[in-house]
Amino acid sequence: MASSYDFLLTTLAEQIGQHKKILVGFSGGLDSTVLLHLLVRLRTQSHQLDRERMALRAIHIHHGLNPKADLWVEHCRQVCADWQIDFRTEQVELNTRQNGIEAAARNARYHAFQHELQQDEVLMTAQHLDDQAETFLLALKRGSGPAGLSSMPPRMPFAGTTLIRPLLDVSRAELEAYAQAQKLQWVEDDSNQDDRYDRNFLRLNIMPLLNQRWPHFPQAVSRSASLCGEQEQLLDELLQESLYSLVTSEGAIAIPPLENSSEAKRNALLRRWLHQCGIKMPAREQLQRIWSEVALARQDAEPRFRLGQHDIRRYRQQLWLVPQYQNLTDSMLEWDLQQKLTLPDGLGTLLCAKENSIENCMTVRKPNSHEQVTVRFGVQGNIRIVGRQHSRHSKKLWQELGVAPWLRERTPLLYYNETLIAALGVFITKEGQGLLDNEEISVQWKRGILYA
Image 1 (cartoon, rainbow, N blue to C red):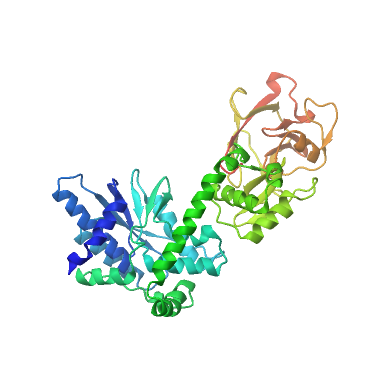
Image 2: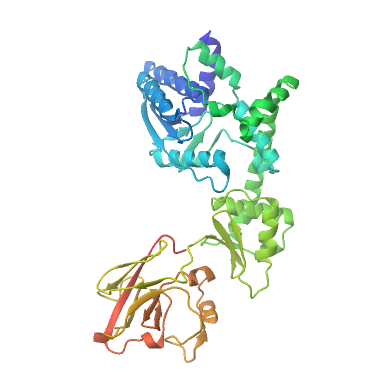
């Protein structure tokens, strides 16, 4: 009977192409067990034909949600040992604060996949035709556009390599028939019977009715998803040049050209800009608010719109995507100049440098013996800086010096007692100006990855 399912081997071989290093997401369930077994058979075939041996690895994600999870790990470990597959498991912690357990589990899973992938290795997961139909309906429930309705592509870039879903045209019934013919053993997750979860509700209550009425419903949905994907790909190609011209080298997007575009084109460009930045596709209402509340806000405002873990900000007639940083305005750090000072929230370190010619170094007067040295954040009031005859209000000064609003609150301010000496990397005040070489110190700021 097994030979009647050899089309699965052919389909899989076509999807793999020339790839020889494969990491499989292996839950131990029916779908991933069939995928792993097919790959083992292909590996055997290539060895028999004296071709380069396929390097197979499997990773099992322990979500910590089910009391049987440890048993599933041992099952998967034993299967991989029997089939001579390199196996590893990864236990993850779920962040359910934003999108619930299902989304949190998926995010944790793919983060673990990304961390585990080796050079020149592709990732394979076992989603099938019925999964695709469920994903489409879930996107429909959310009111998604073509991008969301395109559901899961059979292959896509992922973590510098490729994610391949080779079973998207294969139904669960076909996978189960293959597994039974091959006498495979797999685990059953009892949480799949809990229809409080949206996907389970569709799988248990809706899909059986649709399949009973229209036996080829999953195939029809898959075609619709493919057509939506083609439309999105076409739009990507048509808008690529426009998007390239709008996005700056720093990753911001220019506002004025968007004002002359139709709403549909503007929204399409904004979606693609956010996608380039790795942001989940926003809803239409969110795009409208970004445009009206941020891009079109009055000129003297400093608007922002929260989108997930980021803010959309406006600066110099551009939209910027900025992480939500820790508020540091009440922070005050005492600094012993003989020691390196670690700044909060990923901003890097400060140290007294031996010479002032190195990068990100400023030379200021040496503190007097009675002056306490501190580092603070966020300055208000009038400031007189070196090179200027008159003092300026801090807001005007930051603007003139081209410092974005969100960086003004993250620039380390050097104080002696209550006197501002310098905004490191930006300006030195008159009070911080050195007089003689032997009365000066050089302060180096080694910026962290979160100063941006």
